[in-house]
Each structure stands twice: as structure tokens, then as C-alpha cells.
Length: 180
Image (cartoon, rainbow, N blue to C red; front, side, top):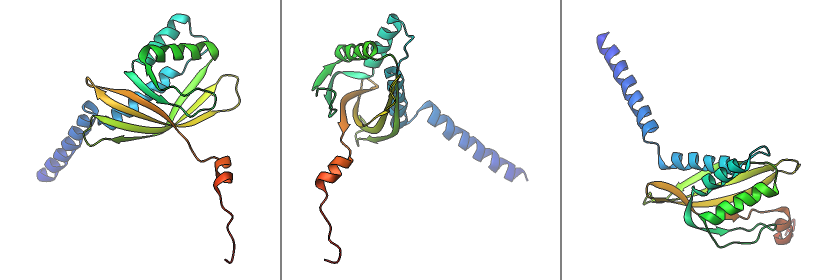
């Protein structure tokens, strides 16, 4: 009886130790997912925010990016931009605040692939954005490249991923012949 109790106690202590280890030292993938959640949170804003809160939010958003970020956007409404610094990212965030009353951004289905050197990673996910007053939901597949710089995971590259649309399917499909 005493041996069974000691074995159960030892197993419980081992499980508790493993759980504490994962809480204190989370995996890079978990850190990146949490950080991308913060980026989505910082990109979101409401209409009742004051100017000081808008500037602080834009600065906070820009802090998740490296000093120079390569941006490749394939979105019809936006021009393709090649490189931005943190100040320009902040300016674009402030411009979004002035052009849109409210924006709710979510990153869905985040998939993180860590490089073998564990110093860089690629995160691909779906961005879901809702603008107050708009009926359409904005959805875009994205890919972020992150690098561990001075102990922090920073976004170094942002790109849209072109997904197969109905028009692409209509243009590329070939007629298929039954019984050939």
C-alpha cells in the first residue's frame, strides 16, 4: 500500500514538474502564437479611443516589428510596399485609425514552423477583420516571417498569400471529357 502511494505521489510530482516547466519556459511556437495574438489585439481599435490611446496603440503595434520589415501585399486596394521601418508602420496604423471608425482584427488557424536553428520562424494564418458599419468581413491569408532579435521574436517580413478563387478556377480549368 505504501509503495503504491509513493508511486502515485511520484507520478503526480513528475506531471506537476513537467506542467510547471512548460509554463515557465514555453516553446517558441507558443510564444509566437501569443505574440501574434497581441499583434491582432493592437491592430484592433474602437471608435471611442482618444488620440493619445491611438498613438500609444500604434506605437505598441510597431514594437512587434523589426526595424526594417519587408512587405509584399497582393491586395487590389493597397499598393505593394517593399520595405517599412517602425515609424512608417506606426504612421500606417494611425492612418487606419483616422480612416475607419472601428476595426476588429483576429488571426485564425495560426500555424508556426520553426527553422532548424530556432532563430527564425514562419507563421501562416488567416486574418479576419471587421470594420464597424461594413457588412462584409475582410478575410486574407497571410504569412509572417519572424526572427529572434535580442531575445525577442520580431516580424521581419509580411506577405499575403494568394488563395485559389472562383475566377482563378474558371480561368485555369480544362474541360474534362467523359468516356475518353
